[in-house]
Length: 57
Image (cartoon, rainbow, N blue to C red; front, side):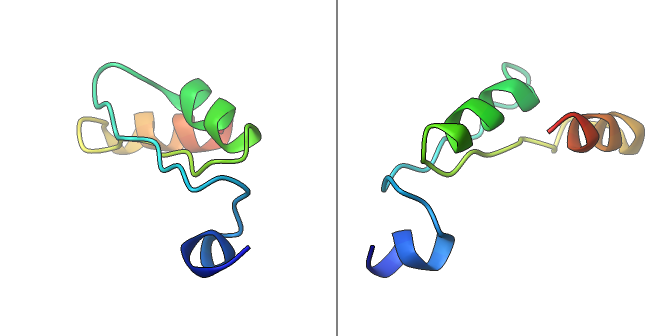
């Protein structure tokens, strides 16, 4: 691995787009498990919702 993949410790050079309101921890986890960089959108979450999503992730 070189460059960004090495820096982020990911197998694939894929960064999942944030889909606020359309995704939760499950998509971020699946992307990460597949070797890319999963993203958890948090801009529309309350502090408690964010905590719940982070714990699930």
